[in-house]
Image (cartoon, rainbow, N blue to C red; front, side, top):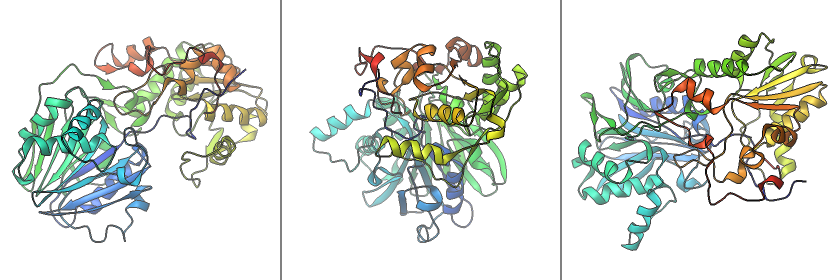
Amino acid sequence: MLTEDFHPDTTLDKLGEECGIFGGFARSGNVKEIIRKGLFKLQHRGQESAGISCGEETQTLVKAKGLVMQALEDSAIEKAEGRFGVGHVRYSTQGGSSAVNAQPYLIRYMNEHVAIAHNGNVEKAMKIREKFEKIGEVFITNSDSEVLLKRIVFGLKKPPSQWTFEEIGTCLGDDFSNGAFSLALALPKRVVAYRDPVGYRPLFVCEAKEGCFIASEDIAFTGLNIEKVIEIMPGEGVEITENGYCIKRFYGQKKECKCVFEHIYFSHPASNIFGRNVYMTRVELGKTLAETDSIDADIVVPVVDSGIAAAIGYAQKSGIPFHTGLIRNHWVGRSFISPTQETRVNKVREKLLIVRPLIEGKKVLLIDDSLVRGTTSKEIVTMLKKAGAKEVHFRLSSPMLLNTCLWGVDIPTTQELIAAVYKEEKEIAKAIGADSVKYLTLQSLKDTFGQTGWCYRCFEAQKTKDENPQSKTLALTK
């Protein structure tokens, strides 16, 4: 019997996306349209809010909740002018969902403007915030990004036009060297960007005919006349001026700990992250999953869009035919948090359509990249069985999610993780109504990426304060 202690509260059985940043210098004209297009290509990293800050000596800030083309429509950015700027798409980790927490943040300090756009999560930021508040500092937002900016201002105490790349880097490295950050600052006639010394989050710089730009993923540069794209290494950053760009080290590189979920879920399939193509990696994970599975099924069906590449890999390796038996209704907008379980279920039904002739009477092998809370997965299994599926077997191209994340992935509590609650594949299958569930093993994932240099924390069970000893009897609401 399930009880009411399991409280996942978002509509989709997915993790909260990362944030995405884009910025730089446009050689001629205005940078705002280049930034907007770049952010549009990073929309998958955050659909909660979007913003642009651009200018020369002074800056104009435009930001709002919503998707890029809504928050940054033509009329909204009409007055934004200038060749330098930064932009941001957001999904909240620290800070919560509120218009005031939308980025970039723009401040006026010593009569000069500086804007910040940040991807990542800095656990230590809240402790530093408390120290600032004790000496009388006031914060407008609840985000760690504002703490980063405040720390830089407090450390340098001079006009932003006089801040050097090295001085900013020292402020970041001194207090946040173990945190996750890829961030960009728009200063008077300059843009500087930094990637944390551990390398959790990706960061790229692009030299193009149109100018020099930075972004969270290289896919954001498509559409530009690209001359060179370089992945910024951990502990390095880049300074962009009207004379070009310069990549510099601001902190000694520590032991790398790249986020493996960038490849499993967050990054765009066409991107090349941490030296690997994302799509090809997901296909490889699907093949690896098939190698360890002996299920007898009629068709392989991906959960769209997240499971497509892994399903293709699984089908190629197993020889079981691949079919898109689930079709996503792209006219249905992103499903945000809904107030009731009935509303959440209805939104899943509106978003996904079933090709009944492909499903009816078949043993369906359903493939997705991850299983987080269970609500969407449970509803999809139910929909497939109502459409006449003889059996539904669920396969995941990542290991069980067992632990929270400190570095920017929205996994607030272990009570929200179905694998941390039920722990065994047989129990998880029963909870979501599937005939069987099978995950990629953690060892297989490490064999694919490497034993070291990657962060696997979310797949490794650890005793945490939010674990409930009665977790076996928890309610499946997500």
